[in-house]
Image 1: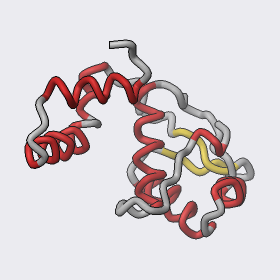
Image 2: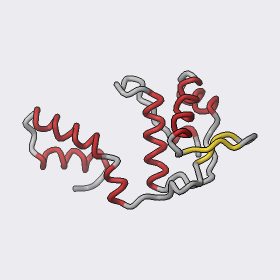
Image 3: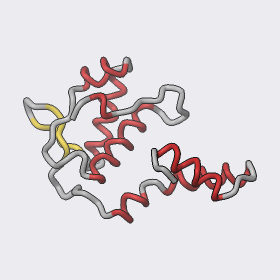
Length: 129
């Protein structure tokens, strides 16, 4: 894995360490990160994204405590090999539920139709619909 695979949004209300953990969770669930795959070092991620190394360390530690990652002596952090394999499409979609619920609420508050929101989503995802 390369540090550029992570996207950090400093202006987001979600803490950076949580952004990292959630992205790791999604990358593992989708199969983009495989069991045993090494992650970039704390220093590499922090340097690439210009963030505090302690923030990355906290994210890695939390992901390790959740069983997503494991520490390999002398090698660093790797995706855990204890069964966090690729998830089904419905399981991956469930990971989006909190964000989709928030989008649905915002759309209702803005009085936007589901069709308008879906057209925007298709555009953002690069679909031609």
